[in-house]
Image 1 (cartoon, one colour):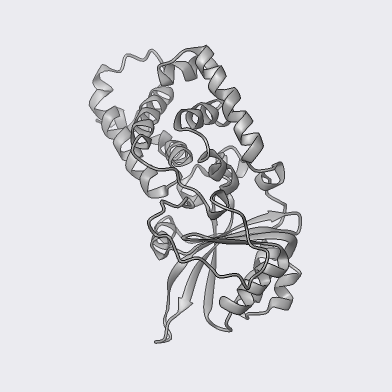
Image 2 (tube, rainbow, N blue to C red):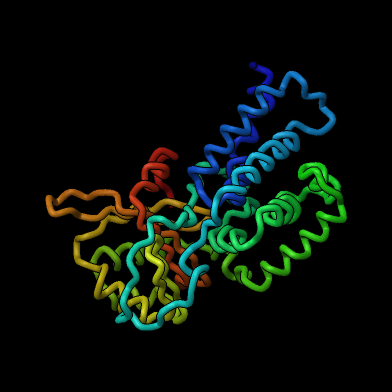
Length: 312
């Protein structure tokens, strides 16, 4: 048992990231990592070392995830389901709690060195784009382009042929090029802390005039589980000003999710207490905010709090 823990535990953070990419859910990824370690523990006595422990664990984890995905719907963001609104006066659709929405993941649950180096492949736009792919194409693309496994290794992991892997990879890359994120969505600008401070200050004070200087002209706002989403600074600011911003109504705590700046949202109740409301994940391009993804799901907040003290 001691040998098993010593050999396998160092890979837990990267296996969590791998399962998250495939499933789009922190909670589901945690369950599948637990399943992976249970299967590995049961089979450890027969492990003959024909591959590395790391690759052996990835084979088990990928198999578990693909089995789970046979009975689970893909996890989209609102932008993956329909066109945006460019007028804040449109009727906002009712929340869709029945949709299995994409979830953010705390940076603190991932390998810190990999996050800093940008090697985790968990940027929100990238994971959202992955959800558009069939499950096996997701697995092939992440194993080849994120993890860097060779074609023959991926074929072994998936129990298929190198030719099938190459074919799936071409289709996956083509689909991602059509519907996936642009390179700017995947790059972290330098020195975002000051921008984040200004955004928090303007949001808490309910100051649209201050917010306008922080948002790109083509900024986008989406708020799962609400299917309606907005594009354009006028529409986004109009929605926030008329339906969200109230002086003293919000407390925002900086943290990080998906390798990006994020904020834990706490809303003031009628009794004057602040209660968990959700998480905002910000996509920054240059010195401006390009996208606000506000996960209006209070159940996500404890996972970030449990991961440790929120940090920038």
